[in-house]
Image (cartoon, rainbow, N blue to C red):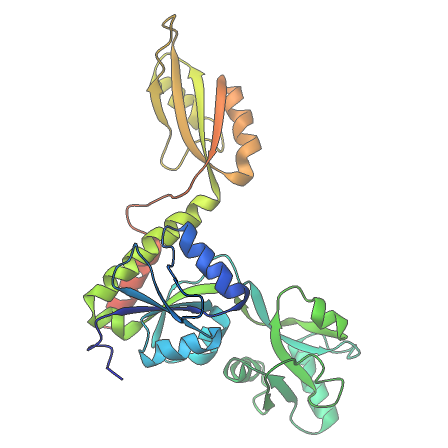
Length: 337
């Protein structure tokens, strides 16, 4: 296999199946980076708006390994598997909150352990058993580290694949460390998470091979493009565009009235332009961006300053001068030098 410095194509790994795969493809499509996959049986595809980028489909858990080894340059997968399988900084997070794949990694005990609610309570369980606690998990590195932080550095990790929830009831293990999304399966199997037993909150993340970013300018350029469009799309999802007609003496007086309110100030401020009317009335159009959850208040505030003809539209993208995520990536890379 060619070393990444000899490779000319830039590779982005996506989950090959499941909800994570569907949501990753949907995000890229809505962010203007749609994946073209002519044959659904193929494990290679392209992104027409990013020439030179090859999309590879892998198991979600294999993507961090490929990134660590440098066989791919970028990946979208759950942060939980990235944190478990990459521990030496080989993989750099570019965006850890893509908005899907939410779950948490938790310490989970049998429901009938009534006196065990905190991590500290596990010390009493260990003393009662007179042996190290047996913990079944797919996340041995994160589990060992978390338990050691709580003074339990002699646990017996039982590496397991597949369903873990049944393990405590059949005596296979004392407790488990597993991912929880809704908690339904956990409760159905008479298990519960410890109050302070959350090891990690996770969702889908965009990550990259650190060495590729440092040694290949073309990879750094693609990182910027990915972040530009993904961040612009995600930022837009929480906002709405509002246009309203407001009567006033001048743009300045209308801006002053807008700034006297709480939520209608816009991103940097409103855009105000004169409305040409038949009777030459002093009307101006004010355009602003507001958060979706503040729409009702925004309408009320616009009416309070005399706004009418209010139009509300969705926003597809909000591009910044330079995404903060890109600045953070550059700072992380410069910190290595």
